[in-house]
Image 1 (spheres, rainbow, N blue to C red):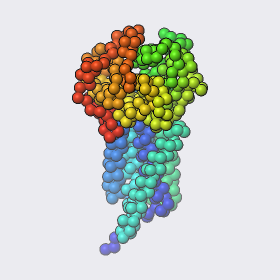
Image 2: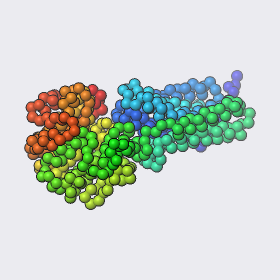
Image 3: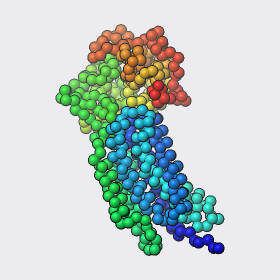
Image 4: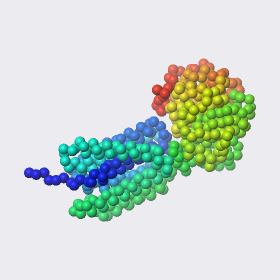
Length: 504
């Protein structure tokens, strides 16, 4: 008995476009998901791993389901609905993440995984079913199975690569994440309805599943998802290439402004009085800058991370004529500081947009009196800024009696701060630690400030300056510091598990 002919294949150009588009859409969702969840749970290795892992799971299960459906039904009947359902799932991502993020904010690993799933699983799962449906349609000649599967798999991979590069280099810089999501949902919907219309014109006898009322209901659900996404609470006023940012007024201080980055209080600036240092750790940094050179004497300072430019403003006011360079990764943040936080740059206060380590390597040897390290990805020091090699380059750009002051955040059992102290001590022979007594006792999480130099530190003057801080703080040196460090391991470019150390 002759085997009945299978479904009519799609034109090669259309099949290629479908696989390219569907695979690319999944990668757009994956990359944007990292930005959607960041304001609620941070941007850490665990968060990145969760989003990537959930995305891969969605791709695996979606591909498996698409293959099963392709063997049981005519794939032509399923392609348009898959695109439309993918559009609905994509539009629903915004309200799911934004309302879910408010509930799961700052949670542990299960909350991170759940939020990552809300951000990417459903649309990625649906869209991943499209490639096996197309492959099944194009397999009209089993002698060309390898060629067809290989070609379409290659096209899918190229679509993913194109989407990855396009999102990272173009889309994120050109539009907010919400616009990317809603635009993608719109394109998927247009593609789905367009494909359904084309298939009906090509083969009028083909019955497309779903009554008109059902298709109208799906369209309404998609529009509702997009509308809810627009109405969902947003954690930021400005979305830069790296941060979800906003500036809040301080009701108690007329000129007080707080910079919020990814829902964390990052910097405080008093527009009327740059000498006002609100955060405790910034007061400690101010004490360092006040104690290691004669009062009001100008210095040369390098800042690794700008944030709200609180310390550059403080130095410009307390040490007029100081020459300062700020290395800040986020150019959008610098522009926000100019608009909202009174930042004024010039010959004496310059900014260089780019990675702090790359910018540090470009600096001349022995050029600076002071280096302040205050660069964070959410609440985590980027690992490549926490290694012995990084500390060695900082030592290189410092003058012989220059000082390095580094802000670190850690929580009990304080594994990261101990390792970072050991790392800085491997380069600088003179090291001190500034921290609250409760944090040193392992009772609470806190900011810590590490101070290092190749020359003896002015501990007496520093202790006196720290005594003016709003809250009690301790300066730890000598054997007490050695005991606190314990048997911690030096962090290097080859071994720097910063996120894992912070997890305890």
